[in-house]
Image (cartoon, rainbow, N blue to C red; front, side, top):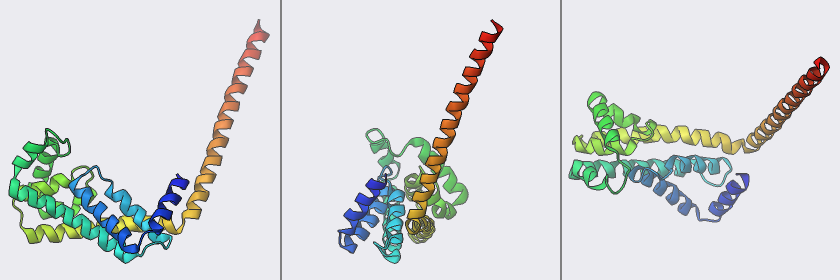
Length: 210
């Protein structure tokens, strides 16, 4: 895992900064349009690079927030212009937007309105469904844009904060992992010795009774 991270860091370090920021923004955009894309993981990794001094915090935050908001609004527009026909036409070929997720998103939108748009980033699995449902419900552009942007900024701030903590304390994290591994090995060896000792004691006791 460490070698993989170092390889990725060296690769991105060789890119011009604007390429790295564009990559992060594009990943955040695609995570909304194509849910299997691991946009959140990329955001955390971007923050990790910030912690190491490879990238700057402000452009990473701006790129991921802008890309994620744009992706959400694209799905809102698709829902607004195509309605449920988009879902019916694509769900058979691409199992991404399930009917169950769409129904859940629609029920929650009726109950919570724009507050659900703010919270959509914290609801893994139905983010794109919420964006589509907001479009199908013909929620207003300005409200959806503002709330989705606020939700995206709040979520990315949390992810970037977590990534920064890891990036700035990566050596400490590695040390903790090493201690954890040694402790785990000690516990495992102790359990094996205890099992063998108990087994030896039972056999000796059985022989004595014979």
